[in-house]
Length: 381
Image (cartoon, rainbow, N blue to C red; front, side, top):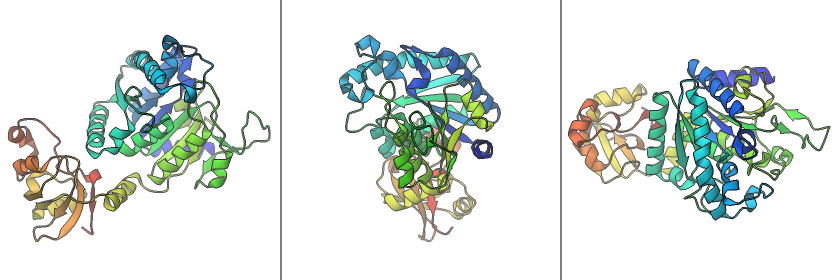
């Protein structure tokens, strides 16, 4: 069961988000460099198989806490926010340096990406971050992502990287999320305290009983316990991504998970990731303008294409980059809606032009599409 579930899920996934917990990457006050070297080798192997991997990594606060005088005996959730932010500022440098060194050994380039919850919830910032991640992935660069603790507030922050990993997966349309932990998934009880605890290899639908099975976080390096991971699994599966909780303590845990040799719990997705995103677009966004398109664009959209500038004949309304706009047929009938990559002024300058002419028309380079197909929902086209 474990082998077929994890192997099939990861083999089918094109994009995978891997979250690394503090307890895995930090030993004392230093990075676990041999473990990181094995992780980099695993990522290199996945890249050769055509997979795109994004890593969400904890560990900055753990690596920087000694420098700002935080005792190792203090639980993370009791550290004052300002001290935690200072520790993160110190530790983030050492964390990314360790990743960069490990990845360069396998001819891989890593990129540091720091996000806040506010940035992922603001449409324009969300699009900016996603565009940057898409460029990195297209160039075979591995994003190493963490919360930007220094500018996050206590009220508006992810709080733990389990949630951040799911948010990143939603942002880039990843099909699978892997939460590497110090335990091999969900059990009926805490296996460290109950010898009768049974491992649960697969969860079809998360219910109250699964929440009750999850224990609290253990004091030490981590802020996310099993309850955090089950909550993340609920968000991920609702958004259409599979989520796996696996024991990452030993080297090459990602490769072993990919071959089905590592104990894990698989939470089965409830929707297709793209379908879930499009349902969100349709339910929550209201158009601030309209792009009227020609017959050629209607045909291209019906075949699953993006909306290119050359297919736009008219721009109405006032909108900014990232706003929702309606898409209208030549006769004015509404075809759908989506998130525009350009403002109304830019869209007017680009209407009817080829994508190659964008730098000439605007004076700077930008996306080739006015609305990417993943940011679009069509009504019966």
